[in-house]
Amino acid sequence: MAEFKVKLIGNPQNAQTMAVAAALGCFEEKSASQIVDELSALPEGERLKKEKAVLKNSFGRGHGSVGDQVHFTFNVEDLPRAATLLLCLPEYLEHLQQSLRRAKASRGFYLPEAIKSSVLGEKAKSLLSQTFDFYDRACAAGIPAEDARFPLTLYTKTTITSTGNAREFCHISSMVHRPGVPAVATQVVDEMISQASKVTPYLFEDFGFNYEVLSWYPSSQLFAPVNLTLNQLIKTKGGATASLLGWMSSFEVTPELLERAVGEKDETELANLKHLHFEFLVPMSLACFHQATRQRTWNHSIESVYDAAEDALLHPEERMVLPPSIRNSAFASEYKELHLSLLNFYKELTERGIPKSEAVGVLPHSLKIYDWIHVNGWNAIHSIGKRTCTEAQWEIRLIARKMAKDIKEAIPAFQKWAEPQCITYGKCPEIKDCGYYKKNKD
Image (cartoon, rainbow, N blue to C red; front, side, top):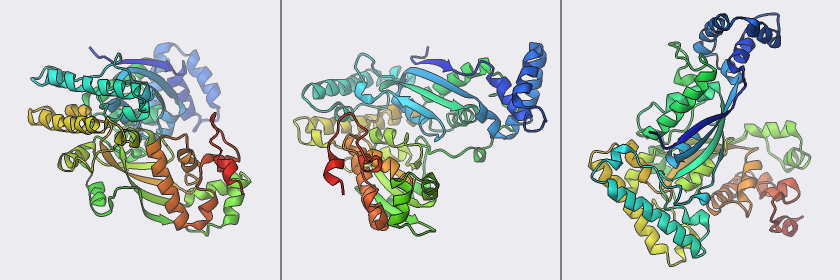
């Protein structure tokens, strides 16, 4: 029996009829609202037969905009972070994620049956319990919760609210049936589709063609068995901090242009900034990646977690993110030992025949992984501003500050604007005002 709980908490009552009416409205003189009324007046069997035929010949042939017309909102409780990481990969799904800072030992952790029933089952329970013990003691000693959480594993339970349209749920449904995906992530998404299908029986039916992978806006693939291109990029360009791989602009970016765009809130010029491009290769913890991947206007290609784990076994110190608050505390040695123990346990599980896709959940959030990020000129102002704020989490703040520094060096006109959000907004939007804007005002 599944430990997680999926609940469809939001969807239009006539979602399938709406999608069909919108599709028919493209080809008929009548409006979609008139067609909805006509379809709703039909006997149920006749209506469903017509809706199935329309969807087979529209959404089922890859016309994704038909599926874009209706959205579904799910709340999922007690699912492991490995599953929420997968849910957050597609850029057109939207999430509100319970912070790992709210993790409690009472919520516990998930273990797949393949591990629980193995000879290493008790060892797994003991080791994962140690991560919660470390978390509780570190927090009690004054270590910030956002740092104490790093040794917690990908099998730590959490909760998430996820919203998306039918097209993107078809996308993620395809993703979870690819090699390397943890079984629990597949089970969660399958249950989402099952519940959505009860209210829209033909939106998620396999009509034979439906979609090919090329039809979806491609998502980063954390659980891919391998990412050859990114591996080569890491080998030639990888480093200890975020590095600017290159940038491109087909127009001159002047201080006057940015003043119009940002200072005068000119959306025409802000839209033009989307055609300015910066590429970064960024090492970060899995904890940080969970934040970065939800920055949906960044484009991501992520290193395979299996490649990262393999390299971590060879270079454990280089693949460990150690928060400053712990590095300078009495918990430093224990933190490192726990990180290494989890890595070695992952190796032990796979050597005992446990599939990597099931063993992966024992990896800690302290594992360093490479994210290949594209940001445009608008992001260089807006999202960089959010992430360089002193209230942002320390790791992503340091990354964003390095990105801002590189952007300013590449295009000096950004000197004034690739700054914390208070500069962009003209005032501090946070409850706690650190005074940065006042200190740096002209």
